[in-house]
Image: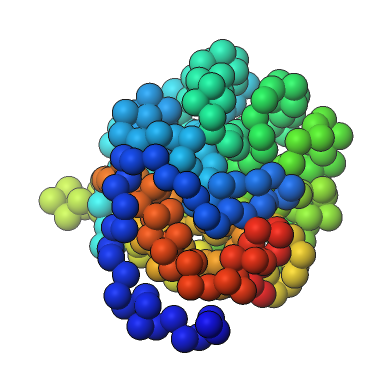
Length: 326
Ligand SMILES: Cc1cc2nc3c(=O)[nH]c(=O)nc-3n(C[C@H](O)[C@H](O)[C@H](O)COP(=O)(O)O)c2cc1C
């Protein structure tokens, strides 16, 4: 059956084909920078925590688990108010609150590996030294991949200030690349004029894969006071409203860099949206904010996607080999 003749099949598919709580034999895996995922759906950083999510589903059922950004020492994050609603999404300025890399190595990572998860450790820093310290500590861990977050809009140093500047990104990659043989993903921000130029800089610096998108800068104002709702004033917009933005970023980077593995992120809350990312050229996808209002969303999306992939053999064959649709 051609990939184009699936319309009627898709229209007949159930919204949720199998229970998210039952064990499942995944049929369609993918490969990202040499690391096999049992299905193409993972969790996005900052929207998954092992104790919370593990109460709702078997985390080993996910394609991968990307954990919250970790820094060399514990960070308190930004003061409240940290979140505000917006049409079709959320604005957040959590500010990378986390208990630090040592706690991560003692607690979250061993727990996730014991549960059988494929783990991507997300790395945060305020400066090159911070990133280097974390990467050095994770280099000997059993994390499967590292994801360098150069795209957080909610910290004043590091984060997005690196991911919007090709020179700063090259300097950081020169520092990090020799520290580990683990596959290194660079997570990109959409808050740039030319995301392909930043993507090229990351790959030239030794990135094995790219993930996109992190959140878009946004804000809300309380009309009773005339002041910003969020204490940080601006935050990062995520959710269904950013879906077309993430998709266009994947498309642009895939067009510029035909061979680099890409993880598509942004506004995914259904198998159909995940499939659009795969057709845009992603090797895999991650579910972010949708898991904050429905903790089982990543598993549900994976099950919905599996049903859509059943009738798309050309796409599934490519994904299984680490190739992409385009
Ligand atoms: C509350 C919250 C915390 C986040 N924390 C991180 C983080 O620590 N590191 C990171 O790279 N991205 C972080 N993100 C960004 C998400 O991983 C994702 O890239 C973004 O939310 C877009 O996906 P979505 O629209 O599916 O939520 C966070 C997002 C949210 C909503």
